Length: 74
Image 1 (cartoon, rainbow, N blue to C red):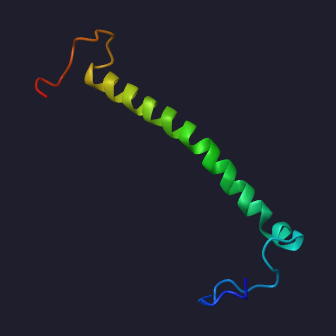
Image 2 (cartoon, helix red, strand yellow; image 1 turned 120 degrees about the vertical axis):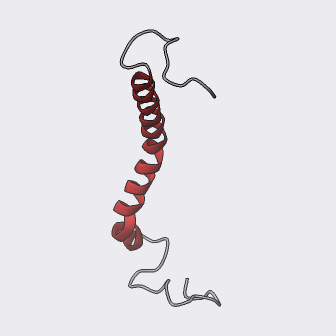
């Protein structure tokens, strides 16, 4: 991408973009980023669910009565 008029000096490197050498050099980083972005929403959902369940148990003093609470107002 050296042909671009505004480079800001950060796009120069040994390999050009979009060729085999570029992807051999940066492919691991790209794939690990894609894997992280594909699994993180699932981990975030279950993490939030566990956090809510634990906080509910603390509010109920670890009991099973769903109507017992320490919070008396909204």
